[in-house]
Image (cartoon, rainbow, N blue to C red; front, side, top):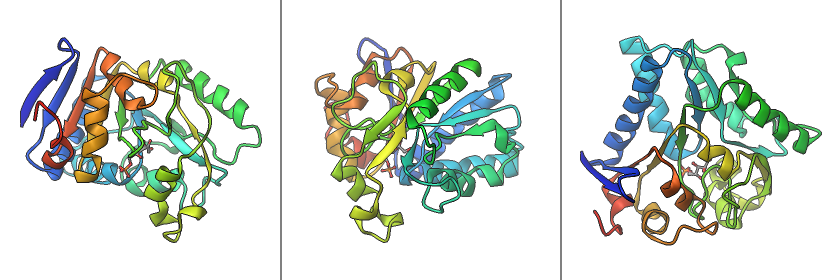
Length: 255
Ligand code: F6R
């Protein structure tokens, strides 16, 4: 594991020897945060990169007694419109990947309601619920091919809050596998925490693996800090860790 810091020591980049170690490192950091915090508030993400991280966390729960009972969780995003019990929803993803395997009460887990009749009201209530929980202590993030974190497609204002957004065609294509491999079937919209919401988390943990992410990882970490690449905002955060495998890091100058 090689550790590099950039941007006057603000951002820590961990170059893992392979994707499996990158995901184990991320899980270990989440576990350490949960163990060290009396009332952990976790920000969670979905997607393919996260699957191995959740498998590792379930393993730590099963084999090492890691308890999630004191945690509250807030996910980054959910498609719109989609019902929470739809198997293609992020609600269903989270139940299958993590929640039903660990000791967390369902009422302590929250995702934006993709079936809300009043999406703007749901987004305001989501922000309020995060505030009422004391803010997010550790936010887990992936990165999309458009540079999105959450579903903050370009351009996304760095001050943006939880809101209804239009998904890029690139993102709908990236996520077509659950929708019969037809990108046109992927919902056009989503509810997502804003870049501003994400930036208020006290610690951020971004994980990217695989060659497909190399170009956007370089743009986010070494290109201009710009609303055209939402993930570039992370370089302005005081406590952001990025965990990469060699393929995702291969275009970085520092790698
Ligand atoms: C999902 C999310 C997205 C994904 C990103 C990467 O909740 O917020 O930003 O993290 O699209 O997805 P994968 O890991 O499938 O490449």
